Image 1: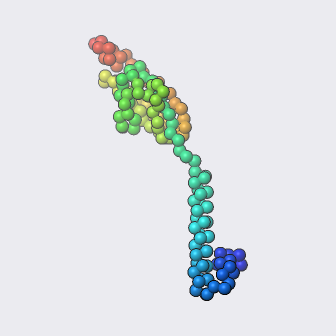
Image 2: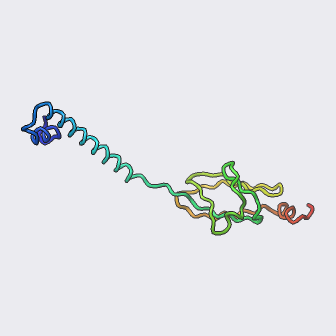
Image 3: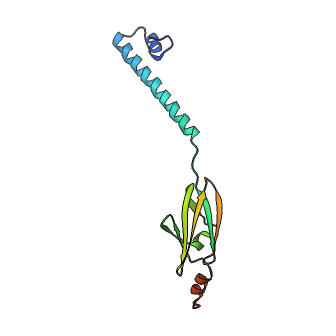
Length: 136
């Protein structure tokens, strides 16, 4: 037994106990030390990890009714994210599409954790004319 180890301390504290009880206490003390050690390691790993925060994206488009598609998933309209409400995106590269009246604009957008981004997209004259009912 190492002097100062968990088994040594458990055995010393229980000098008047039967040998079988001392062995059980020694094993329990070793297990407790191991669990505490694992807990401290896990805690250190958690403390070192940074929480990932989403980026906030405001979408401004000349056609507020344009459909917004993010990474292939419809997310509403451009107008839904033009005011105080923001589109939340995980850090990384995303593909944003705005679609209206046959016009499609696609943007690749790289965002970082906790970024605040404003995206301005113009769908062009054809989309505006179609929205207003003007023949092309």
